[in-house]
Length: 122
Image 1 (cartoon, rainbow, N blue to C red):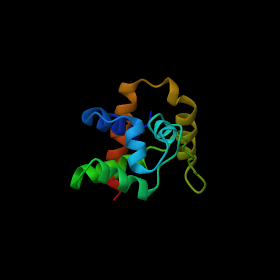
Image 2: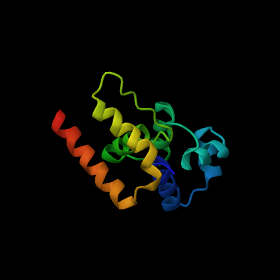
Image 3: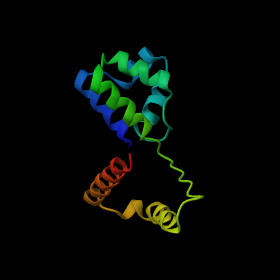
Image 4: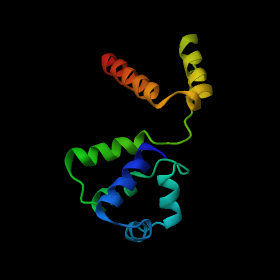
């Protein structure tokens, strides 16, 4: 499941909405919505995210958070390290080979470190 999928499921559960009901309202199939929630589909279009925001009547910061989750929820990531340092290429390959063996606690820690490092670069 992707971060976006997890959030969509939580929103549906909070409001007592089935996948079938939500899919019909958004104009997509229930199978597509299920695949999106389970990480078997890529990032949805901006237009679909806007429909989801409208469907759940999400405003301001929560709408921005949902858009950010969509941007960071593609289940098949490709990292192009051409032009970067050998260390960057090594990190990308190590992460790709090891992600399924890293504990959730360590993943959260690494994520926080990467976000902090990205913030320092701006």
